[in-house]
Image (tube, rainbow, N blue to C red; front, side):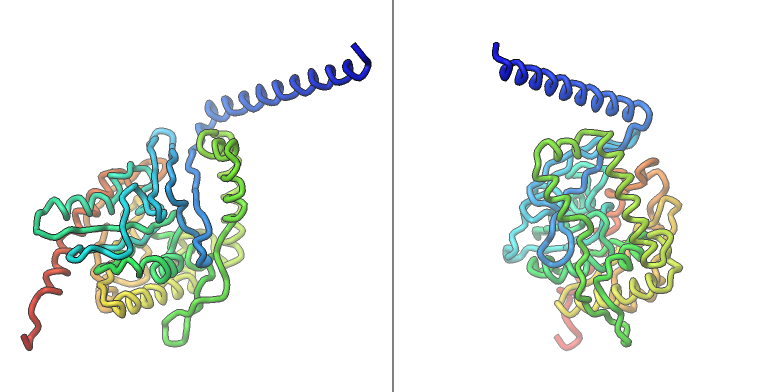
Length: 355
């Protein structure tokens, strides 16, 4: 054996030993994290929608796991909507369509595809057998407030030509709206789109997700997710501090509250201007309270049909650790939406006073 071959052999042996040692160390860290922390695995596969906001990655299949709460499978269709049901932009004549906009609650953290409120509502409306075909496309994205939902509606929701647009409000929406900085409030109470985009770490995520071994870590490694979750918390705290907020659900922050009120006003104007009916579904926290910046009478005066979760949900409808809805929460929300939805169509078909 030559001296060169000997050096190469020693180098290869050292490299193999280092790789084996690294693998053993990483495995040990993974085992320790699983024993001591049992970390949640909830990868957020979002991409740039092309409109300055996030959207769900299309044709996704992944796993979400939260200790003692759930271990479920998540899929998205070709438009990034939760589940594998496809909805053509141009709907078939006679089809009735209700568009869902919301955050991780309505995207369905913690439940299987067929247990999400949109899927349950669609199935139950079609099972009613009233001679109409109902479709309930769901454009919800984790972390959305009304700011990103309004952009989503304008850029991606309108082409689906919905009859009803159901916006789901949760108590962290004011903070999400303020942090996004997508709109400014006008003197007349409406909003104007700012020139800023809101794509926090999306470019980096897309690059990382494109690497198969790293994507696998996001979906399976609790140690990796422990680091990711801690870093995400740090980033969120910086965003909140920049806007003068302590928490995303700080409904008393004047700027966040005023912006959220203006966004809800604008949403109603946009939807009604398109000939559709706006619906607002209030998702209370586990204490069954809400910081929505209007009372129900004010929301109805803006044109909303209100479905108030405080009237029919209880703490048992929420996961203990994750705090999202259990399947029962989705089922109850869908059930409570059915009669208002049917009534909206009845009213639309009723003859006018001059008929």
